[in-house]
Length: 200
Image 1 (tube, rainbow, N blue to C red):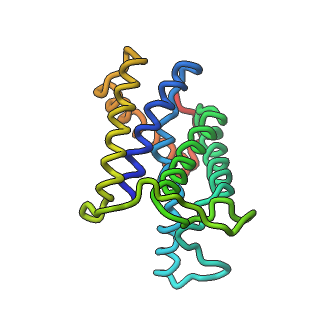
Image 2 (cartoon, one colour):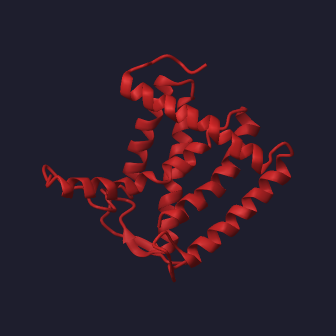
């Protein structure tokens, strides 16, 4: 699953963003969408390690990041970096990062049978209920059945956001991501070139 994770997390981010704006006046919910991909970075790392013939001291396999300890560690590192080099609040980054990461784990849990050890290293047992099992492939990008349900949930989330947030529109929401894109570019420049100047 890849496209499905993005669709499901987009639906969740709309609701999280609305709640955050209501209580804090801030909207870091774009992190929900970005961090929902974080558990699958173990797959990318695995491919890089295999390509470089690097297997020591350990080799990272797909599924190694699909657990609560990885969620806590990656979310904490993200929160420390973004709160250090930007004006983002530590708790905002931590909460939205954990929500996005947890959403990925929850989606895998309801799609697959016993597959990932979510409570590793405390337990080696793997979990999964396959309530929404994969049934067909869409050009290698997504499962049709899972994707359709995700699109329905996204549509529902858009409706909820428009109903409860009178000033919110799809167009304004899309335009806000251009600003997020500028922020991500800034974060990359901070990490690459050491520019610690705060965002205005």
